[in-house]
Amino acid sequence: MRLLHTMLRVGDLERSLEFYCGVLGMQLLRRKDYPGGEFTLAFVGYGEESDHTVLELTHNWGVDHYELGNGYGHIALGVEDIYATCEQIKALGAPIVRAPGPMKHGSTVIAFVEDPDGYKVELIQLGTSAGHR
Image 1 (tube, rainbow, N blue to C red):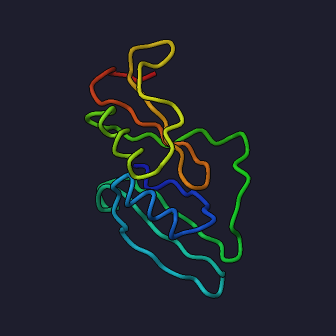
Image 2: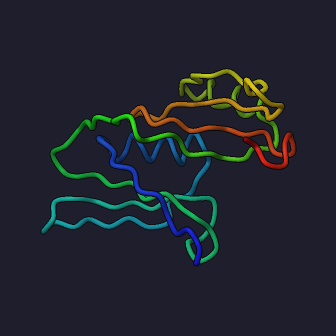
């Protein structure tokens, strides 16, 4: 078994694609409209679905906002240089909601950015801790 994808419901698909592809550097792997169900699916990621876990962005037509609830945590991305990555993300206009630095009770260097729908994305400096948490 392997993890295939994580699905997020998004209020504005184009805005979300700009964030995940334009800001975080993912690629749009495939996109399909489902007129009968009035929704669009877009799959984004850092590599082909056959080899990588990806994100499924689901846009339900006519819905422009979702309540995130309190069960969602975050998506995590490993980065080579967290400080430079955060500067690039800020320059592209996305909010860094937790500046890069060591986590509170450990040595792993992390930061958090927020996508246009309010979902948190954790950035983890690769090589700062073997187990992360």
